[in-house]
Image (cartoon, rainbow, N blue to C red):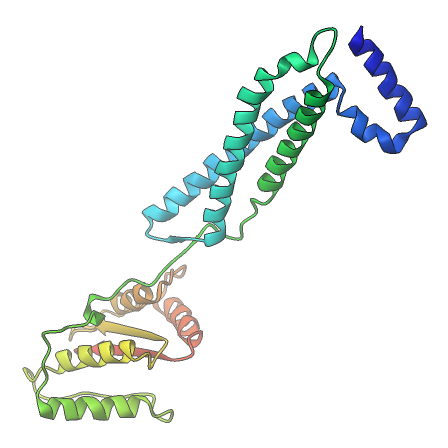
Length: 263
């Protein structure tokens, strides 16, 4: 009887006072149950989106890629929203179901629950609609063990003189190529490695790439080494196509030092 009277009152308010209808409509059991069912559907859809995104994240991590910060933030927010919504639908709503039943329903609790289920649904929809990423992850340049500081390296004074001269030349904007040459066994590679480490630690260049060329030059292998150090992916099969990709990537850096060892 109470529910019938309340329904009649709500319909009258809807006709005579439309601005007040929204507030009083929260007292309607049918609206609450409809919103509650819609909330459950939205939560299920959001769970599916979360699982799909988590699969993409796992795949990217297996490839050694870094996950975009907005993706990680979305997953964290999504988890919180889902936990809150599930807790509401499974616990609070069920525990307070009696407020919608009986001869004298608890109108204050009914209004509170109706507004809460609507708020929860909007939060879930908002998070699900935010799941529009340009990309899930990105490639990072591999750490070159040659460029890790070598505390055991103690160059001779004559080597330090050469090192300082080379570093000075590298800071000259008019110099775009340097060569270190000499007979075998005089530690040219060690000098080149120390130059690379020094340049990196002093931030003289935005990017430092150290590549082992060897006497039997394999162009595709060299291209592959540079690609890995720059965090680049090749989509071309030909050497010329890969060379163009490398050239474009290298031009994107403001200052880059590429060391080709053992030419």
